[in-house]
Length: 617
Image (tube, rainbow, N blue to C red; front, side, top):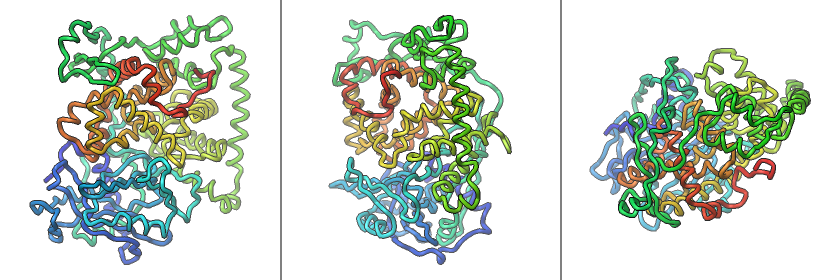
């Protein structure tokens, strides 16, 4: 059975790009005889659909080549397919399914954690989470073996059980410095490029057909890093008007209380703080659930001037933040106003003070940059952390928003600047260093600032609040996921109950949203619009968490009617990229935040990122 377009997500496209890379590099194949088998388990399955009878079974292995460890899961080929008690109807996966869902030699250095689940009824399974925050679909161990796998891994790498979740195991390579692992690949293959409102067209992807199971396993150990996938999408130049840009008057408003009392039905949202209704509206023929205050047009130069006194001070920072929250900024203003939102400039600073600060910070940046630029080749040989971080940055920047004209083309100086800022930051914040995902945050900042030094300091200011997203212990991410879970329980008890029954309360399917603040969910312009709204911290510093809840509620009916389990839900959430209406989502998130009030604030643990200082608020 082929895979439907709905399930054709990150995992399937990743398989395509990996196979293309392998096919193009066939001369470099390494046979499995050159690899030591550390662990092997037969009849480990993955489910491409919700139908248990159509699960794909295969061989799970941990391989060691030289000093590196790799995880592979290769589906059985039809002629070798094993009929077992759980192989209902003797389902045999198609060649396409096998190619799409194979896991080919993922280095353990690129795996951040393994989540183990052992339900009282049903099969045990694990969820493998990469350093990027992406997770593979669950792997079901029908004949047991998860404990054996973990014990075997402990013999070769360092595994730490999370103090927050006894079923979560954090992985680190022993042979490498565990201070900071690079996130291996956040170039998400299922995401429409979000570099512009330009039209993006999917190119057809070739499918690599293996001859037999041995040839697939030979390919599995050949390489470790998937291709960037930059060439998978065609970047068009024709600008299109998004439905978000339609007249705000097209929105309907909340129905009167009298009508609400008469319309308590399945469309009503049941919450722990009362019932309310998200009213369906049509905007450019796209059905939206909207409720709350209308969005405003972006702030432009003439209005911006009214917020400043004669010496350049922002007279009323709260009013400014409110205005940006409801309308965003015209692009030409972002270079100036973002510096206030990010905390690089104080709201009460003058034109003269800001210019003096710019000159001072430029000198400071040049000193920081020189620290690593003056390291000789001989010094670098004895500086493992520097080599590791610089190498990670070099691999990531060449696949960061390269279809955007600002970063496109060979020998692009802006790509070099992106590289230099990230390496400099790894010296500025040596404890944290560089983690993949930081490149996603820096890209729009550099695009807006058009200045290396100011982009660096704005990035530093942002990382002061978002650095916990990249902590090795994942505490920052777990606290945010926990908060989303509590907010859903508060604001939509029926959705919470369903996710609990589906064993999805870990909310790992929201990991990507939170890790890089929805960077991969919207087009580039809308990402900038969303970020400046979040940076106002007007209603709450955790508005992004309410945005998660709003999007989940938007698709609640589909999730529940199709009885999505974790695997299907993860694929569905990833597939929403490029299909979420930002303006409607912001309105819904605001409504939920207001509705939750202080009770919602109590759902968010103290210290949950982004934590703000008093002057930022």
